[in-house]
Length: 313
Image 1 (cartoon, one colour):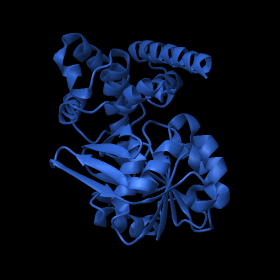
Image 2 (cartoon, rainbow, N blue to C red):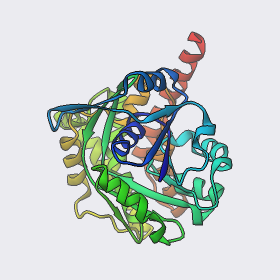
Image 3 (cartoon, helix red, strand yellow):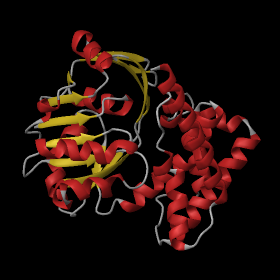
Image 4 (tube, one colour):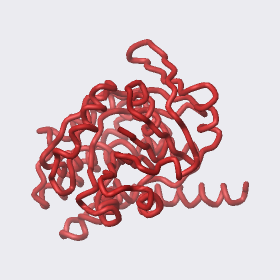
């Protein structure tokens, strides 16, 4: 099986690196040439602090999109802000039976990809794996948990081979009949953690050290749950706030993906996380004032970062 990972950031590199230990062909694609060159020269170093271990794997890395041609699976791991652009660019390299998979954060990516590839060639997944980008050719496996996946046309038998590969690589994966509940369950967790870490500069676990951030976390989560409840979506856990806090504790040393965006002064995925709660709330008549405020603050920081990058270019 040929599996191409589009977006070799922390999570894309983690999945590509783990899969490369199997007998399948793996392509890691990214526009970050320093990262790609480092992988091709020295391999990809994966730190495993939970296992007190480090390992170097050797996936094939490239910045040439032609190398993705004839892939059985195209896993899209780019930032949600460029999902549409990437889907439109890589659909021309897909065959009739190629499946495009999203494991991205937030709400709306599956819909975008489905609009380009068609529902019969699109799958959506949710993963509890966590990773941090340390530098060219280096990542940290910051959290371990199951992955769930479902075809958009519900013909899940088409995913069996890919799921077997993921499990063989050590990434526990299950096929689901309905992914919406899991997408929203992860969204609520991201709503409670990501923006707060980005705005404060705190690691996930440090959010629990301050009553102020815990109070904000509660309101953000409560608003998101109100929207989910009105939409008739049942979350996969009974106590959302307790679950969010448990995730923050389990991934205590992790810098969230949004905080990593701020580190790089890259545009964040706020519109697909807290911003998605605001958008869905407005659609069904529920006010989400704290999520709106946090979204506006992160958008402001995004614009500041974009101006700084333009001035320094």
